[in-house]
Length: 472
Image (cartoon, rainbow, N blue to C red; front, side, top):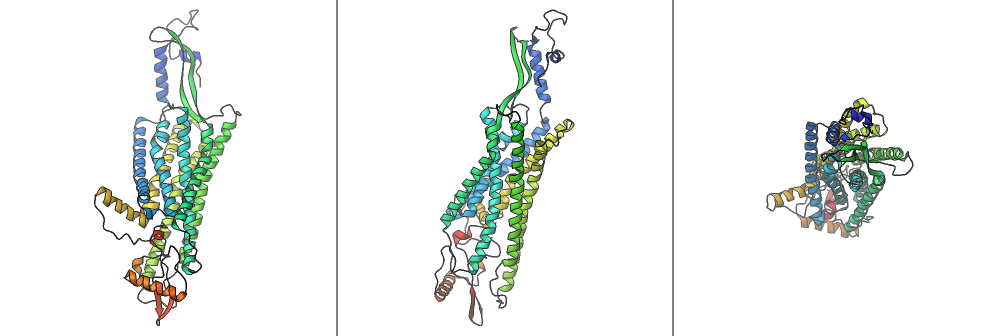
């Protein structure tokens, strides 16, 4: 990359005859060299001015939308103690990682990629790579854990439904503590996966002209070097070829933990959960002895809920696959030098930046998929809007919350009883007859299906704190 003296002579003359005896030791014109260097730097800018404006506006829109969406999710969980359940803690962890990524997206990922030079410090070089990397890993791992948790929760709920007497439920506080520990573990694992970025990213100078004798504006002869500071993977005195291995290793880790593992987990457990809901959703009454008054309505409600849950699960896996595939593919091709044709460098650079931008859309979509489409979060968002935006208190019944687990759990309002006292009395009578106590975290049975005045079975409805631990 360093230019030879004879190459510099073609751009800046020395001010004396080439045949002079002291020509090779004569200094260059410092003003001319500085102008030439600036022109060279401008020609190496990766994007044109209008492209910078377009990309910057899109990144700003993504960041602002993500800050608002994920900020609302965090506020909904933090402001109300009843919303602090194990599943909502995982949603909070996802929103937190997305919020941090939205705040650092422009200063750490976009702005340094505009110019050929990296005008920041060594600390910023490491920090600008580790922080976004660990946050992206945190988001994908959290999504994977949430997919597993949804399936386990639904299977556990069905077992609870059919076997009340054998139920052993841990407290809501203990479940939240487990979710917090899992979130901490996810952050630690994300940092470990990003550790090579911290160890091997360094700043270095890429010189164009080094130790050139020039005449400055004051007429004094000085020695100057011209080049750009770069932030890139360096061996830092280790084995000469270790940088290449680190680059390839990081590429494999990205493909595995940013795409393959989360997508496989999402697809596998969402498919299992979809089949589970279709085949194991419990009916309110025995199929052989239906209740004429409620069976039709409940069947339609069950079908709608199962269909909605299935569609949402497919949207979660599909959106992740669509948004992260371009970035994963182009990064893999670039790192393994499968698209290193110099004729298409500018095109590859624009494709790479566009793929990064597409993947960043996930931090805007995640609050919608895991927050707004959740009944309880949507309820909290509405309350936040009326309380803080319209400055009014929204009338609501805080004792009742919908539970969108699936058709497994139904609204309390669906009960044939309209009076809470009647519900509790019926439950108490059932408990007395069964000779068992109501399990912690659950209310007693609220519906009794009868045929010829005989009790067939009881139905379980979650308490308020459990109902806030929403499925979707």
